[in-house]
Image 1 (cartoon, rainbow, N blue to C red):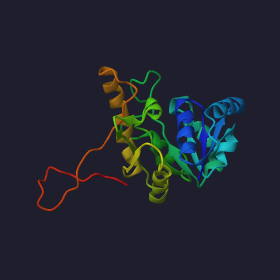
Image 2 (image 1 turned 60 degrees about the vertical axis):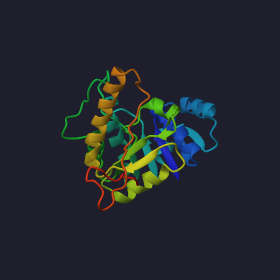
Image 3 (image 1 turned 30 degrees about the horizontal axis):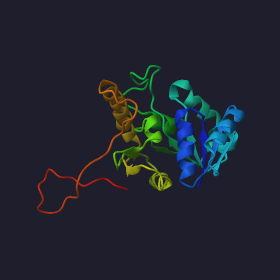
Image 4 (image 1 turned 135 degrees about the horizontal axis):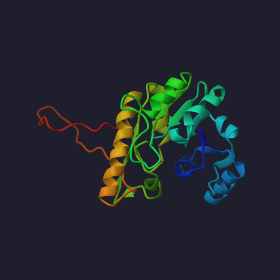
Length: 226
């Protein structure tokens, strides 16, 4: 599968490396193609290419690695024609400048705001709960952590989950797009906890449970594994 990534910040670069290492063709797009070219050369993944934003927008799956506070919604509006009908993987959390809170109210999420502005785009929320440093060392003493995937488009959601095969994470179907409100807030909480206990930003969630069988105590639940 071909994936176009918009942005060469720490999340965009890490996701470009993640997906290209898993065997997907990736175009790392930037406003400055020379910057993207330098990054792609340093990463040296044979399936990773660099280009401008428009090169990345030619892919059937597009992943913008841009903050809402930096004008993501308006930028996507300008790209509407190129994005229409495509899967858009939304990784953004609506942090303020110092990461202490969100710029969105509790009644919505970054993913929902994108879907509202671009109704012709198949929005899937993913990687919202994963802090950047986890990509550099995803193995927690033999335990792989989870990526929560949300969408109102079931086929698009399952396709994004399948894209994760061969990457060092477990992908969970976390339900409807509005569940992004919870996932985003969980990330805000993990940031606060990580700072308090001195392991920020290398931290992530792992859903634990065991399969329930008839006659078993009611306090056990089955894992929500895709």
